Image (cartoon, rainbow, N blue to C red; front, top):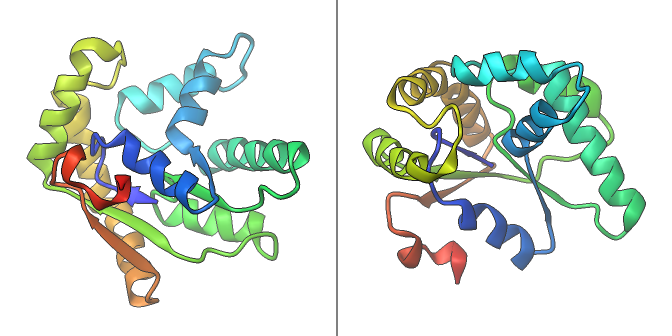
Length: 181
């Protein structure tokens, strides 16, 4: 699942997963959890990348995603469909995923939440008033949007050429979006 940074529609990430029997995994949540985990060898590194609006090294993100997938399937072997939120974010992520997960997973589709930059920034700044997140500020958001345009959008375009992109107009309010119904 891909979108511009901070599209601000968290329920739209989880609702389709639950509705269609997928387990929702957020790369960002996994990274933030790892960053906070006492004794994490990656915590400080993750913090620096997130603060700078840069993409965390692929090996770290894939290891966290793979661990979450393995734990989910170990707890319930029927839970073998995943909606991965916020990954891949660039060509390096895509190549790392293909190398690590080749033969183990199949990307059926990419769910793309399309939204104007200013709407994303506005939603995030509003969320920032109560989130306490270090990256909910205009400077970090503008860096993230630049990174998105340079690195993530080409990946979405690639999947679109493969016929695997399903677009959702995320400029609507949460109440107006069909993915929640």
